[in-house]
Image 1 (tube, rainbow over the protein chains, first blue to last red):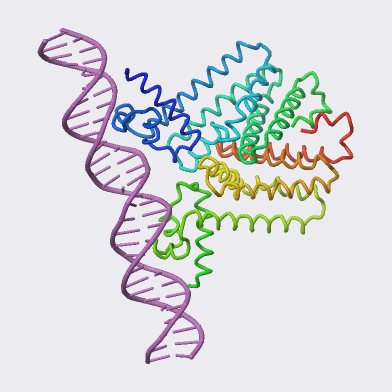
Image 2: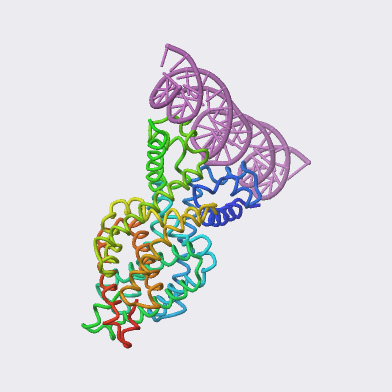
Length: 200
Length: 200
DNA sequence: AAAAAATTAGGACGTTTGCCCTAAACGAGA
DNA sequence: TCTCGTTTAGGGCAAACGTCCTAATTTTTT
């Protein structure tokens, strides 16, 4: 088999295993077994575990960027685009209830390990934050766009965390609905001076 | 030294190490070194790592219960009590930015490991959820009390998670303020039928 | 078909892990 | 002072970890 293809399969398998088992708890042996290659062969493609992690983060970044681009093409309304983001919580509900948010859990674990690549992983968050900020800006939220983006990111993280702990689908549904409602209130047309206090 | 005292010191050290390094990454050797006892002596007090974890969870539960009880004594106004909860994010800001939420990160890690004690750890969340629910009930939120409690818990988790990743004190400040504002809107007197849509 | 390059298999390295044992040191009561 | 239960020290276990090497095999090039 071509090296590129094997490498690609390793990255995909490692991506899944890092997500399901965590970085620390996923081992070379796990990767090799998942791709059905020998450990020695594995070493041919990746010299160190950190190199695997770097490749996985890169892969996740590419996937997310592609997803954001697709949302931009599917919908030219920034509010609808943001709703696509919110709905990830529903689309990936099963996995999130089982393993949490792939981005958040990775960043948290790397922070505890004080891992060299923790800032690389944080780029996954930054990617969403900046994209959301742009959508809010296009929505006309002006200098609040950045804060609103972080607020939404915060809520999706919180929901993912509690969904994971409590395995409560109704809770997820409720909070997703609330996020949609909240978003509807952020359109400048309805954000009168009096209602500003209700922005969160 | 008395066994009780040594055991207590082990639990406190393990509590800190589990928090700062994560469950998987904290080893017997780390505990023993932190308490300055030999590994053999350590084994005298705790046979398995799981036993240490169980003791740490129990210890954390006791601490949190004591904290909640103190808030109840300090303040007989349920809204003020809830504000005490929100302000943990400020009080523990430094640690949270470095290591995340002690409860949330533990639950997330144990979920990924599919650890036998993950439901025990979840009791830490349940403790806060039920306490918050009671405060909201006393506030007169009726059948919404439970949802509001989960919503607040969700937000504190989300803030802790992003605070950990982005190390942004201003973000924390902003979201804590928003949570206080949100809380003020949950008093039934201001929750007219028209404003119900703004509840989150 | 032969030679060269790319890919694979399998084992072995030194370390660290959680766990366990034995024997020595300690401390309180007889 | 002697005894006996409690606490400690230190070593050692098998397994798993990340890493590395060499030799065999497959694929590509000539």
